[in-house]
Length: 416
Picture 1: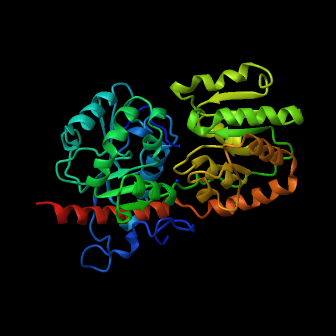
Picture 2: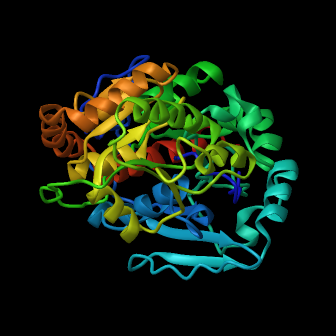
Picture 3: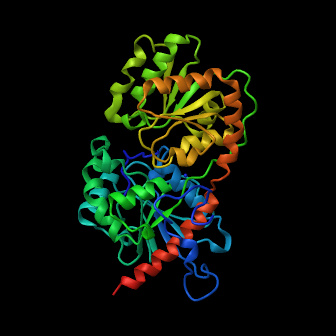
């Protein structure tokens, strides 16, 4: 599959790159599978093409995952693969500074046009657009990038497109649910960001866990924030959409303001989903008018300022394949209040306050604790950076590099 410009699921060793309980058995124990006949599984240079288009615009969700993993793969030293990143767009050019040695291929082909050809006709093979050959072609989405002869890797960041197809937009709604099962079974490896997502993929797509590899997100590498005597606001970070449970968050905040008028303002940082504009209508009416602010998409510099000034991060999502904002906040020492749904409990561990996101009363009470319980906030602030250090882009890159080797062997074993 190619990138849909509307797709933002994000929207980070042993068999994992962090210490967390596994679900559904051992998911793809790559580290136990030597490749080739030598003692070092990484003796050969592996030629990888990665579809980089999600990173062309706002780097949230999939785009952030792709950009950070390419950077980490490029820093693997002697285990480093030979990397080519592919981009296509009619108007957006790949001007990003890439790590040394990473080749770029940037074609002036409209995203939607190429996606339609790739999804519906599995043509053209990417080798017609990017000089090959390649050993592995890696799609950052659930649908494969067509290739003449390379092993194929797909990435499933969450399964919301299967469980709530109506929440998808445009080609996600059109193609993902219809094609993902077949593509996952034809792919040589399926990459997921969490054990939770791996279990969901295995169950809903009837896929063997041995075909799945978990490559979580890593933290951005920020130092813990300095003590903030008077934080300015409560913070939500993510796409403003129905899946993020914004309506209940606003209801809970309004309920809290009714009993605690001095509660800090709420800031929503994230792009508005085109189909969910109505969710922000209450911001112009009492009791929320003047107390809730939507900032839209913010760049990394502004995002970090918002985190630094936050009483706490609130993530009441109904489902998350990982939960990058939780990891970002924890690394800075910002207290995290998260839903006990999806992958968030796996990411947050004991370093956050978990709540039922469907219970508006419980959500309001939990937000109230963030505002009034200084001891709780001190504990969460201290625990967050410790939990965040359990994740690493380097460890995920190591694991993905090993998965590429296994994908190549699997592909060769079934190729005529």
